Image (cartoon, rainbow, N blue to C red; front, side, top):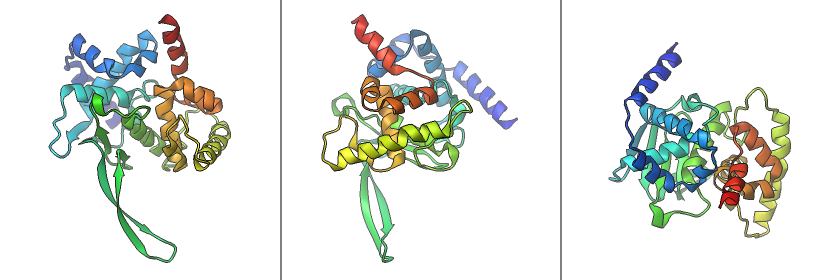
Length: 259
């Protein structure tokens, strides 16, 4: 009953939001991978983004002023992976914190001898289980090619849906856990080998850090450089296409052909 009320409330709040067409166009122009969507999917994504903004609290850190364009950009990117999954996939948390550029998080690690090692970890984003998503914001001149911090961190949130951050999100009933593992495990092992061998991989080598990072990095690639992912790891692409219920590589190919 509470979830039904929450959905009703966010829909009403979204109904009251007015975004001029030129503003949508300006924001979306900076997110060219949205052009891989079928034309009829754009209105649905915009609507989901407004409902996301109605439900989440987005704040800037270190005196960063989060503009309306930034809010729309973050919401569109956060909602792209759940376009056909639904906003309830993000239901167990509220906050998004936006940093101006990368930021430092203090870490501590206990080694095998029981010695605690403390260090500062420079990161672009972080997703906390049950807590906020933290992302870096870069303007166009600072953008990092092939890296999408927002999609990456929100993929981690989806990964947390089964209680473990292990690169294995809660799958819909029509998907097989065995098929997922059969696609992801050998691809992850191959990617780790390539990175360890010093290969200059087109896909972000950070994906070799852990299976959870592999899922997040492959999710970035799925939406931003889909044909690259499909060529490198077709079985992974196929599983992500089923999970996200999208086929951006087909949209990328159609766009290329139209040009």
